[in-house]
Length: 104
Image 1 (cartoon, helix red, strand yellow):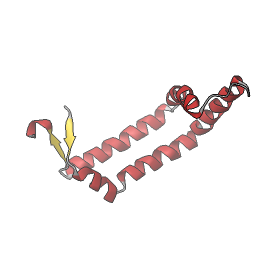
Image 2 (spheres, helix red, strand yellow; image 1 turned 60 degrees about the vertical axis):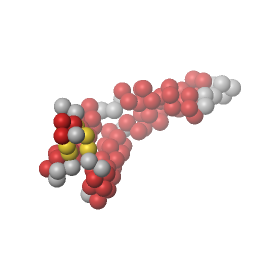
Image 3 (cartoon, rainbow, N blue to C red; image 1 turned 45 degrees about the vertical axis):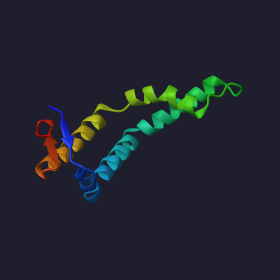
């Protein structure tokens, strides 16, 4: 069932540093897993293959590498992130910040 979040959710996340914890967790796990280095290598490889006369723009580089980078995120990192987000949402629900659409 879909849920709508009370406007106090952002305040709750700010006060409890929920989003900051998630961002830090993702950053740390991606660096630890070597994902960041793999993405950097994919960018370098694309630039090398393009040749110096036909370098892609930053936007082209991002649009080309992003799908590959997303597919390279380790499953363990995805699971850990999902668990952390679930815990935040459970805490929000316990704090009374979640309301059902049926209540609207």
